[in-house]
Length: 115
Length: 116
Image (cartoon, rainbow over all chains, first blue to last red; front, side, top):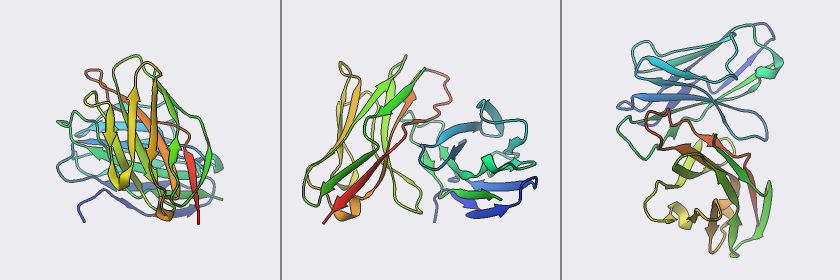
């Protein structure tokens, strides 16, 4: 399968613990996005990478959140000291820089539950 | 600033009848508009996209949408609903403005139910 993959698909953690999610984009895609979707809402933008550079971060991304894309390929999203309000689906999407149609391809998401 | 408003949170239709999911947008720049579908426990799938070419856009599974600048609308339609169309649908806007990150701005979603 050459689509966007995310790992793990589900994560249950206790409040205060740290969690890390991974996203593997489509191989030739140099744009990578993270979104968060809470129950009953549409996804909301968190952050954006062009190759290894993190070019934009949403105000939703508190200082407990950090994202990396060290080699311009896969990306990780870490949440430190998780809170119950962090429970959500975390979605990753990738796109081609040269694609003027702005089409983003989404992974299946990581569902986080904070107890 | 960009935003989309999905006018109905739930729509219920009978199988074989037309589907209309309504979306209005707001954008300071020339927008790109999309409809995505999300089936339970599955990822978001692109249905169709408008990127300043033809105003009537055809997508997958018989869906289409018409970009109406005068009404700032981008409603999604299908002539005949199928049971497999039951899912959540998101209207999405992004900007064609040069240098933008092209982050997607999602509406709150419309849950489509299809009755037998």
